[in-house]
Length: 126
Image 1: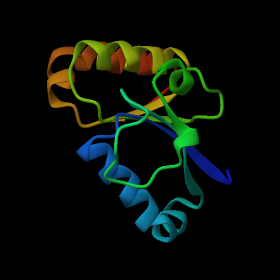
Image 2: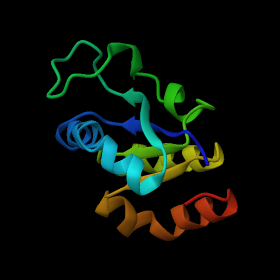
Image 3: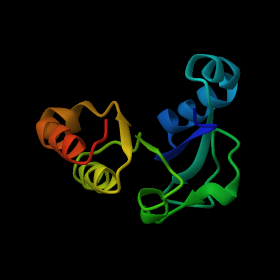
């Protein structure tokens, strides 16, 4: 079994900060349930210098989506940036890079769900 699952986060607003807090505060339960450690490897932000609602190592922050989408160490992309056009583009790129995706972006799924599902299937991703 894998020693960890590496996460790339697209967005660090209210929802993204909540994801970070959930991972940090529930790491022991996650390890027990999943059998491995969850490691946040990178976070896409618009502004590196912005004050954050959560304490995150500045070394993992980036303004370049390719640092997340093309990083071979990242297994799963969590999209919490919102919007549709850019989010769709990033998720299609994530699938083509063989990364699994988690999103709760209802607008994105309503408009492009079948396309994203097919892209995931073609690349062996969830």
